Image (tube, rainbow, N blue to C red; front, top):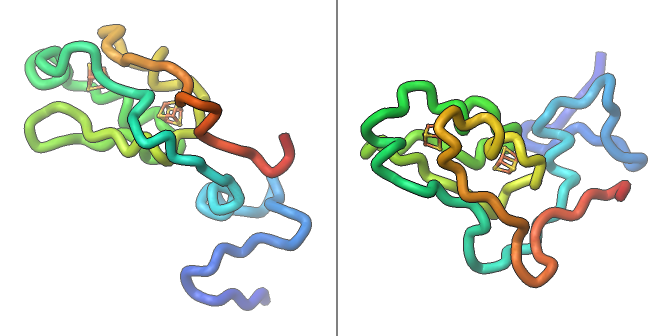
Length: 112
Ligand code: SF4
Ligand code: SF4
């Protein structure tokens, strides 16, 4: 039986294990440098609010960056973005504005 401290990710000193560690544990090892401005946006907010019922951007994001907003337009916590690009391709309306963060900011992975 393993012992863990509540709210402290269970990551070994060698880093996360692809087989055993949770997504939250693995995300804990990622470092983010905030560019101070979002590199993600929706092109036309009205498309989200009036004609989107799937919210694929929310469903596909592994880092919980996209969240459904009360007005129908998603909120975007860009600071946690892993730059995987999935939201850009998942939106059925092509309504995601996607660039890399400015001035070299963004995500840094421990192993590359
Ligand atoms: S999937 Fe596209 S259209 Fe729907 S809420 Fe997300 S960005 Fe907007
Ligand atoms: S690029 Fe990946 S991690 Fe970043 S917001 Fe889109 S789906 Fe989420």
